[in-house]
Amino acid sequence: MTPRYYRTHTLGGSAANAIGDFTLRSELAYATRRRLIAAAPQDADGVIDSREASAVLGLDWMGLTDTIVSTALRELGGSLRGAATRDRVEWDVTQLVERSFRNETLTLRGQLIHDVNAGDGLLRASLSYDYRADLVLRLGTDLFYGRATGRFGQFDRRDRITASITQGF
Image 1 (cartoon, rainbow, N blue to C red):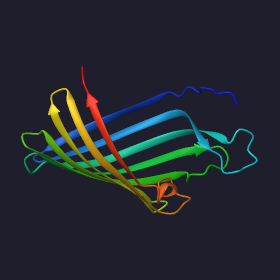
Image 2 (tube, helix red, strand yellow):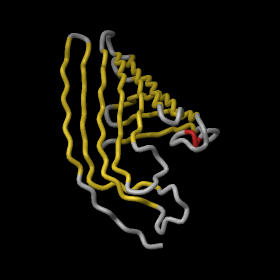
Image 3 (tube, rainbow, N blue to C red):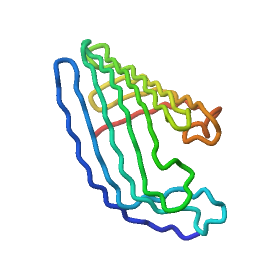
């Protein structure tokens, strides 16, 4: 096995507009080369090249003190040359709820990423504590669901608990 690096160029932009307690966000990106897993087992190197465009439309709400609720819809499309293990166009829906307590030293965060095409996803929850300005303690969990052939579902029954300490300097 010989590792190789394939360069890709990405061009993109974003825009946002705040209207009261709401912020409407949008993002566009185009990548010149993505390497995707090939569906055909007889494929020589197991990957195919694709150009890829993605778009995100999101809405954030900050109507409660120390709270953000964010919803986004993401479309990812590629010019697949050959059979890939993913669909030509994929859709994700994300939901984020985050709330800070104790003068923003304690943060509770919940996030859902749902793959509309495959019907699978990830539910992530975490609690972080800013012990000092340069030291953050975090405890979290990732819960996967869906079919074994899905992007997230392949990790079903492989849920995890994470703990981390981040030291800044």
